[in-house]
Image (cartoon, rainbow, N blue to C red; front, side, top):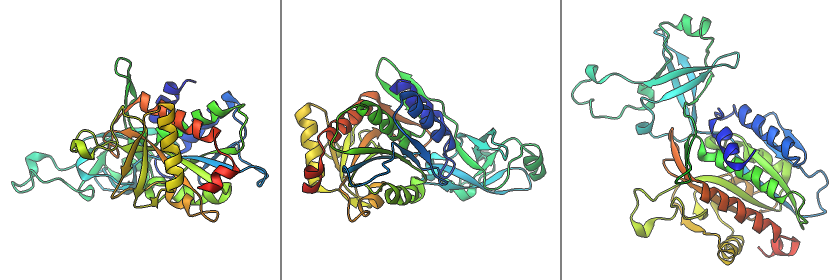
Length: 357
């Protein structure tokens, strides 16, 4: 499976927070086909690839990405057959209405629905131009009663809901369009990094990790960090691109300008020595890199860098336009350079270098 096909499969996969099963299955298939080593998943649907059983021989590099996507969950079923729902992850009210979604049935099938709110014809003048909140919205699956939802559609409270979007690729421009690029691009990057390092003579052990439930508080990473006990870590992310609405002087995550390495966000001050090592290596090798300082946001780097007595962590972010909405754009060249940078960093890591960070 080449990189583009891998990204397509992962993007199209349904993986709400806590329900990342399809992503796990795709990763398992890839690891087995490429013979990348051991594969294990835990009860929280965290994935461990080529897990180190005997620690202490070589430093352990954790290469991480989160496997969930911003999504929703059914909270209640109304008597008229519409579904009241809650967000899983950081949605903007403006991006949610009028989109198609998929709702999982109790037996694992998927039903199409529409995010609905009161039609304009029935709104008072003062509400016509106001954005409804998620509490004002429902998901309509075409049912007419609560009984029909439960007995015919076999949908119950607690059912996961994901955007209904099909991946597209423009060969002329090298731009991908799809859902869940945050963070299925990262998942693909973990797998491709492991593939590119296969058979290499390294001074470190590399463990690939797909962590669950990042969008609702980096929950999976609190588990994976304690299992892997890394000495150093690289977190891949699909990061919000800022090149379509930001003044030129403030653009830090532009599409087609290379992976973004983040100095600061609400979850972590990036280890400046590891950050500088990575940025300088990228420039030395001619890999375009971008730098950012963010006033908000957070990544799995937050819990990971506070584990195992302190862990140097960098974020390698693939710029994604319109993140945390149903659709996003990302450039294949940015993805490829993200993987290339990670591979070249890992090839140069050893015990002495890691301790210098």
